[in-house]
Image 1 (cartoon, rainbow, N blue to C red):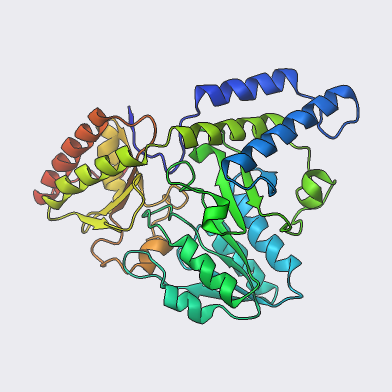
Image 2 (cartoon, helix red, strand yellow):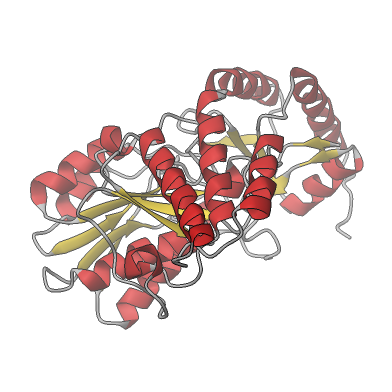
Length: 381
């Protein structure tokens, strides 16, 4: 099997798995317990927290362990907006965010907040001038993802931060689930106040994520229970998951393969350009590890099924919405031509990708286009 769906999830690293199992064997006590076993678990938890802050160059910041990227995004949007409502009532995000941001924003609207959704161009990029126009004195939160999960567009986070900080007191959050470990992501360099990371996107374990915030910035709790995680995220903290995500973050930042991914992406695009029927989305604006392309007059599932029969695992535009018959909100937002709208697929590289895999993808891509030209495509199951 050739796995080319790393933006959906990644294979857990053996070192990460070993760390998780070892922590479960030796440090299974509740980190909130006052006996020595609990204190040992708490010491390990603090060490994981310190390691994460060191990796993102925010030594005096905060780490809140969560069940994944969705919970961390919910916590950032709902928790920060509700906490700072005394400052204002205005929130800004973009139309191409992950559903965990957009649905949280919709919930804020139901609670009486005013939410502005920045539009994007045909490549998925927001306009800095538009952001400058939309930020107000009563803006309390801005959330803009770094790399889009469907088409890979990289937003200018540092430039966004300068505008936000100059014009408001708003907290600036960035969803870095698709960028961390692939591109350089440091909280200080971003000048962001908060960022989200999901373990299973960086060869860690599913069900684990973090919200990292700068010193002095903590959201309001969105669940109710005990006083764990600074009283913000109730529930017994999984020390093994904390250890595992810290290890995954350390490994992926030392083994980053962005330059090789860019070479492979350009290689594939060169082949695609010879196939005039295929359209590349965010051709020059996307992160190196994501290639989103569209075929005319077919559903993306047909291409996914064809590639699967050839032993290659890819996805439609997003694993989160791949079972829907509708074009995704991202594809709608960038105004993809009607004939291409439902034929989008995403190829995404990871640390298991090899040059031989790229060669095979090019071969299968060519075979599929030949079938399209002859009007013979596989029916969906």
